[in-house]
Length: 273
Image (cartoon, rainbow, N blue to C red; front, side):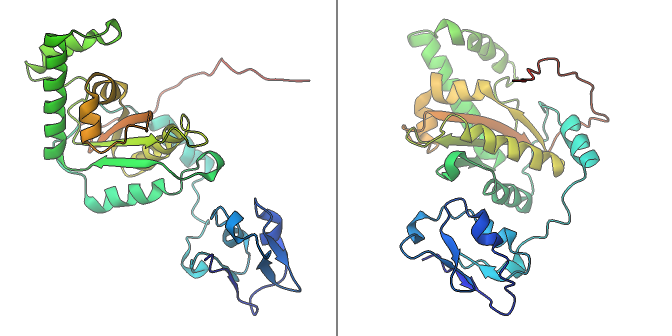
């Protein structure tokens, strides 16, 4: 049930909810908005109708509009520029757990990341305990060593033999000694399985930066867990049909950057027809 309801005392019959519905399932009939009969199953639960109502008259999915966040606190362009320019890939972390409330907030924010065709079938595999992360990295290196000794590594992953050598000296190159890890994966039959994990991780990265956390996109971890030692990726709970998968490391940084950098984007293809 959509639990679609209208507070007639607040509703000004502006029609914005009907005009903005992506699936055109809302109509003004006779005076107030309602779901077109027979079209309830077409709702994609985007909540656009609730968000666009200027008087908090509309509720859907049991959501109370009075409890929804105001948009008055959207960052200014200068604030967004500072956040984006100041974002760094962090490769040095404190060996401690991030505050659980902060982790929970970040995971809540992921519910708001867009997906292709509004298809929310992503799986977020979270490692938020430093001891668990240590176990994972140790099993990963044990698996890599076993592959090297038994059958060798494909040329594409030959560099992992060098990582083994420095691992034996106490250095973790693929996982950067990070205390936490987020794996985002998508089933193959999703409408946009390739893009959705990257979109979600992009949102996660900026939200983490706003909380003062460090992050790094971890292609090496992805190779280790899902290409070289795929049995470990399965052990973490990532389904086999989730072929589109990526890894991000995060935690409290053991460093401090003091300024953003300067870059120029020279690869802009402007089209005029």
